[in-house]
Structures are given as C-alpha cells and as structure tokens.
Amino acid sequence: MVLYRLFLFTQAHVLAGHDFQAENDEVARELAALVADRCADRCDGFELWDGTRMVLNQRRLETGRTGQNATGTVNSAPAPGEQANQALGALREALEASAAAI
Image (cartoon, rainbow, N blue to C red):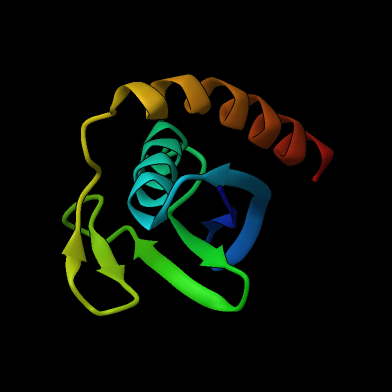
C-alpha cells in the first residue's frame, strides 16, 4: 500500500486535505476523482500526491469536470470499482471532518 495525499481546491485555495492508502496510482486516481466529483458543489479541482511526486492535477474547466494528470493527458472520472466503493465511504467521512475543521 502506498500513502497518497489528496487536496481539494476552491478558487485556488485548499478546501480540504486528506492522506489515504491505495494499492497503486490507478486506484488512488480513481478514488481521488470519485471524491472530487462527489464534492463538485464545493470544490473546483484537486491534486493527488505521492510524497513529492504529483500523481494527478485536475481542475474544472468551463465545459465540465476534466483536467490533466502529471503527464499532461486528459482525464475524466472513472466508474467506481469495488475497492473504490469500499474506501470511498471512509475517505468521504475524513474529508468532511477535515473541511468542517477548516
């Protein structure tokens, strides 16, 4: 398991941040995109980090929820897998607590 850090942004300011573990970058990107989509009413983008390595940087464009990852390819939120659904509940609760504290 790898430790990742997710930051949710609103108007270029950090709204919430949370550390979580995932098996690999693909699973972490999936979780981050799901959380950001579920928080779209409060945030307009997010960054996903593995230590000092940016894994994904996704910002809302005027046309909807799209963005670019660290390699510059365009991303959209994937359909949730079983592992993502299991981890999403705990991650959402932690982010809500983090956002409430801010």
